[in-house]
Image (cartoon, rainbow, N blue to C red; front, side):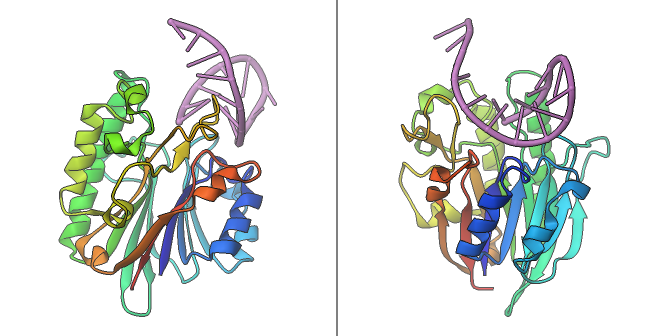
Length: 260
DNA sequence: ATGGTAGGGCGCCTA
């Protein structure tokens, strides 16, 4: 089973690139971030026509996440627990059933947090504390599960072409990276890093200042696997070529294969 | 220190 994550930066502006990629890569499950659409505006027919079930958690203008799956999506929940007042659409979960086992899939769009310090950074750290609580619950279930999406976290210096340029940025500040580690070290495996050690693998290149042409990228999209999912990991990758296509997102898809 | 680009949606916010 191939599970992918893709920050598409506007699903309506990206529907051609998205459907082309779905047809070429045929992932079984996809979590999308930054759909920038309300649920009623999501172009679900174009995706359903390719054989996918679609569940969305959108909002007007910004944010918004979705899950696509060839097999039915069960027990869908929307929103990250822990703050009833939080109206930002950044978290969606569903269960997909493979031939061997079921997999709990969490799709997330973690807050950017800039400028730091400030209220947006406080929101990022508070959101990550809530995410850690949900992550603990996933581990307690002792079942295959994963959390995939745009984490807006550069975990290590090797995950940036120019780490020094990010030193004061909310994506790379020590408190941000520590919060990410506090989640990962609960017992999750980074599906990409586990199979691909070394520097130079990125998932985001800014639209500005020729970042793509200079390969000035960062690795901020991640798939974290529960131990029961990590046991089934057979491959992982980054669809880097998508960044060179027509009207690309500033992110590219990441994926992993699980024997589930 | 600034500005460079893009999407949503129409003045300006978010990234």
